[in-house]
Length: 115
Image (tube, rainbow, N blue to C red; front, side, top):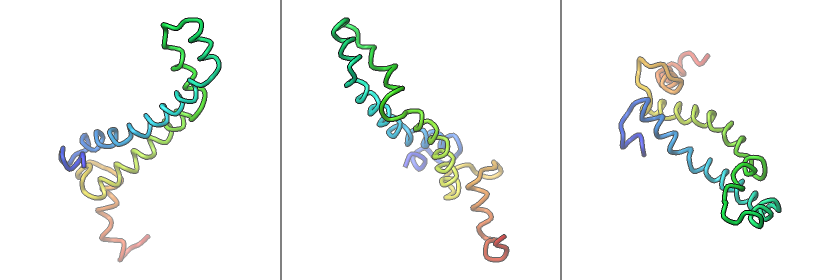
């Protein structure tokens, strides 16, 4: 939808893929924070210093759902999404080399030379 609104091009595909990836990463980080805020050290920090609210962020990256795992899956998903949009003709346009665009241009030859 974003590419259809902004137009065809590699920059617009990058913007669309970035926008599409934000909710998944935000959900994983929220889950990590929700798990971390139930830990005993958070309760102790609240009892010792009730005015500060910075105690939940650093341990959230170490406990609960792994935000690092979400970071490692994002490049793979971004590459496949970009290739899919280019295959459909919404991504990078020739002469820019892009995996999906190259697959789309070679689609006509699959019947005669499948190798």
